[in-house]
Image (cartoon, rainbow over all chains, first blue to last red):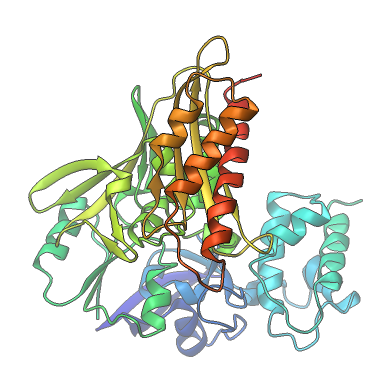
Length: 157
Length: 286
């Protein structure tokens, strides 16, 4: 069974057709051409496929494409404004908070959600908040430092 | 596979009742989609209940909280009134998975997945929560503890689904708590867990108690002997030791990679004692 889906992605009205059992991650990558969200585990453990769905941080591998009908989706592709990177993106570069980069889109989406909910999180809160995102290259220290630095900048401190 | 997203419970029941082949309810999908993608199940029909308005709401009435089956655990954590009344149930719901999983997973799904290690279930069982089941023959309400019958199995009949979970109104001086043991700090499945729900009298003596354990038997177990051990006490050391002994005696765990029988049996007592102390303090006990 094919399903026709009308949805909003990064503010743009978008339509795609997907199979009923197809994940939103696969639909975004293979139907819409947005390949920023990655498939790591496909079981909701690694967070590489993190997106926002109606303002909620979710793993897009555990959402059906069909569920996106009428919803609002935000992906990593909508994070920078043209050439202007989000403070988190800048700090990830500055702090070298990535190596292979597969986990980075998920970390950025999750970190932005964290900072929108809490502008001045403690290190512990950052580590708990990002526990659903796995990085197998850097360890987590540089990522945590980058999030702290971005939080500071975003607070205007 | 067919995907349907009805906007009424009646329509959802009708779809499930008339389905030929395998039919599954989709709430948060954090268990269902993993099983689909892993090839463990191949549904002919998936009924998404998130378009049913009543299932997306938490309602507070004079007698209870009604938690719609499609309300995410993240939403429970953001509901101040629910958190105040049932902090143990909410903390249990908020221990499931990551922030990403929290945004999708539901306590109804956690219950229907029927894992012995489900985090929200011991807290709900201790709380005396009830499940409102809608089906082709109408509605029925059963204690949450009667939903799971074995690992992965429930007492729901064809065409039935859980519409909501009911949490009763709290008397004064009541409190609940949930603790689980995992070898890391987050994102893991309980090795052992304990939920405790207490009501105190005006002199801080335990008037009513419910103790439930997770991951120590094929289903979550309510331990009446553990409750009896602390009713009529101020949760002194001797009462807590009796509670712990009753909990260990109620364990029928398995050996697996997460823990041994001996370990689970011992830790069940430790966690139940600690959870009882937290519940006591939340109830205003001194």
